[in-house]
Length: 62
Image (tube, rainbow, N blue to C red; front, side, top):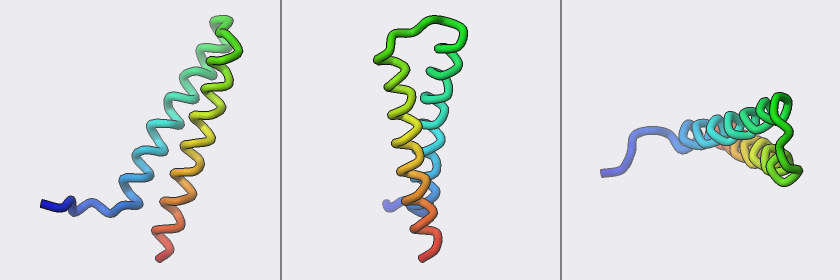
């Protein structure tokens, strides 16, 4: 049975998850000295979240 939830809403949920993970790594980096790779992973997660957010907004306009 296909889901009744619109695709853009699913993408917004995925974007929120990536934003939350990226922000958590940034906050941890402030209090704990994390390796450079984890800091870059936080930036990458936020960038992926931004990608999904832009795709969701483009689908909402259709």
